[in-house]
Image 1 (spheres, one colour):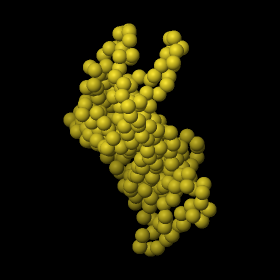
Image 2 (cartoon, rainbow, N blue to C red; image 1 turned 135 degrees about the horizontal axis):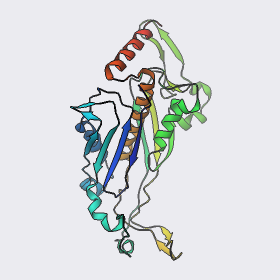
Image 3 (cartoon, helix red, strand yellow; image 1 turned 90 degrees about the vertical axis):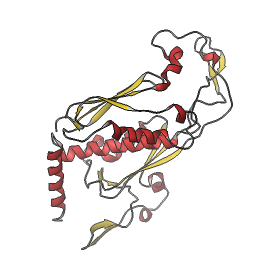
Image 4 (cartoon, rainbow, N blue to C red; image 1 turned 180 degrees about the vertical axis):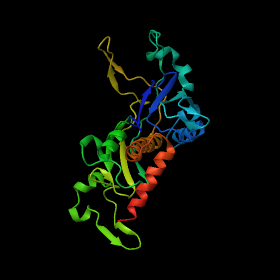
Length: 287
């Protein structure tokens, strides 16, 4: 496979649409809009979503890179229209917005909550990633991907910060062997990675999400033009968006693992990748 697996996004919070370009997927991979819409629907659910649950009905439209339900091998373009955009035309127009609109926003009372979500990937092949260079180690790639999600302020891999509070005997995973199951570990404190690569156990990552900044009880701020003290703008906001962020976390982990998978087993088409992977599995049986 030429190049690498990557993606770019464009669009604003209250803009007309969000667009993503995905590059590096092999040809022949089954892909339909319904596959993506299922996860978009999952992201829209969850306790604490507030008024957004009533207006968000995100649906993806595939603009390029897919034909007859399979990828072509070129870049894939996705578009998700924002149904709520009409309600924000005056404040997010590409031209000058109406004066005083922000000051007319309704004020209320309320607060927001953050939290922690955990993402687990099962049945990952051994040796995804690399122990050679810092930017190829799976630990760093996962941490970057998780922390790139909006409002995420911390990432733990495996035991994470708990490893700093335990002795070595309570952290390191012992290596065991028997003829029936082969090599295995009694624990998974490392979270499925060692030395920058996967070790065959479940890959585990946790993320700490801060409370959303849009409060119904506004915090103090400053008018940039007059330098006078003002209250922050109040708008519709989720009391808690952690359940939705967890779905995004699943996607980011999947993207990192898919990229590492293609680096190890990549080819121009799905059948070639499958042959490479099956050959690798056969080689493991000789250990």
